[in-house]
Length: 119
Image 1 (cartoon, rainbow, N blue to C red):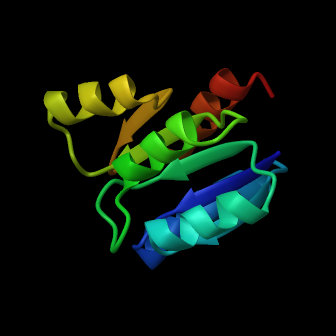
Image 2 (cartoon, rainbow, N blue to C red):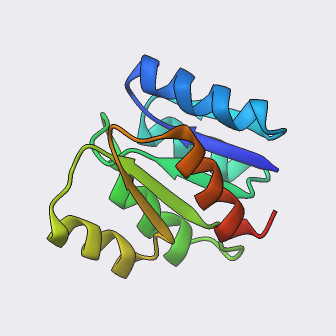
């Protein structure tokens, strides 16, 4: 599977990418939401994993973009340090299929990836 990871923290990005690559996925990465949109528009992506707080386009805007503006829907998992119930609810209302709070166990993330993509 081709997975786009949008995360502005380089350590978190490497952790997520390593876990996904180790389980056989191809990982593309973006350090902000604008880069994420550029990649989504030019590449075939099977899943988007994004942080919420990033420079430029925020993670929730990415969720809105892939669920409202793209013809082909891409499942979105959010991994964020924001633990507010309102934010989690809002993310799911926008179309996020999963939400993990930081710090997270990479094994839990991989299990979520499998459950939302059935792969």
